[in-house]
Amino acid sequence: MLNTVQQPTIPISDSITKNWTEQALECYKLNGNCAECSIMKGHYSFECQMPKIVEILKITAGLPK
Image (cartoon, rainbow, N blue to C red; front, side, top):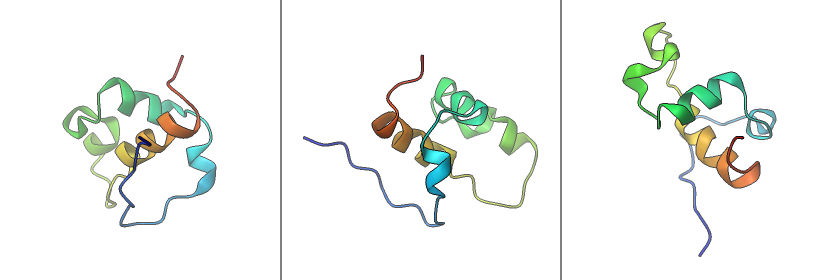
């Protein structure tokens, strides 16, 4: 069975789902725990899509090394 990823509410750029970025690695290591994330601690005014990006990266780029 293929893994399915829920479609995000905000469009995600294809470029961010090709490689593991520092932020994606942080999210992966935190297991998507937004309460511990540096983005959430920065009080940005946008909805973080990183947990969704991490799920896409796991499929397209494989698990981080």
